[in-house]
Image 1 (cartoon, rainbow over the protein chains, first blue to last red):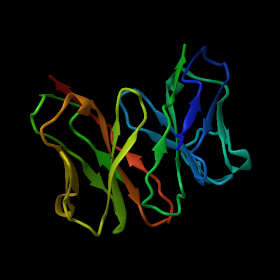
Image 2: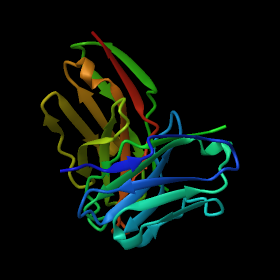
Image 3: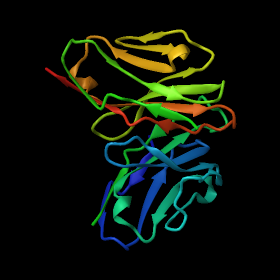
Image 4: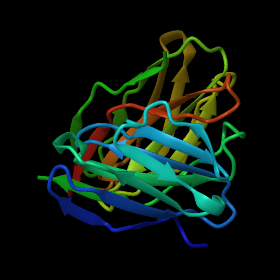
Length: 116
Length: 116
């Protein structure tokens, strides 16, 4: 079974530029998560989708971050414009369903973003 | 509000030593779930274990064991006879069960270095 795929693996941009990250979850997984992991910290949930609907985006900085999951499969996270403090690893995870609170999440390898 | 504290930032041991990683959590819910994830250098978080708040039984899986104590709000993780392959960052996480959706709050992680 293929795991969660993310691209690109690394991205370097200058502040005020735009960037987009892509995630393809495990086939059949209804729930998709985007996390931000700043160096030395634990992952912080940015947004959670159940199929193509948003379940929780309370910690997403909506003035600059946006995410979509068209057709309930793969997803794109965008930052526009980027700030220095956005430098982090962006992790995508999926699970069969967030409605089952006990489900484990399966994580992708992440995209390491450096904003100069 | 829920919170997870991992006070140990980094632990260094020599192979075959036993090591315990501490995790203390805060929640107002009576129903909640605790998790441990491992993050090797490749970056992908790997699920290790889940416990629910109604099950205080300790668990052993090979060289891994977990001690859940509600009285002290702790969910500690012990690796027996550590190996170099155990070197990674370990995260403890909490999800409250009240909403029906899983929303993980992670601690800051403990980096474990096992030297030969």
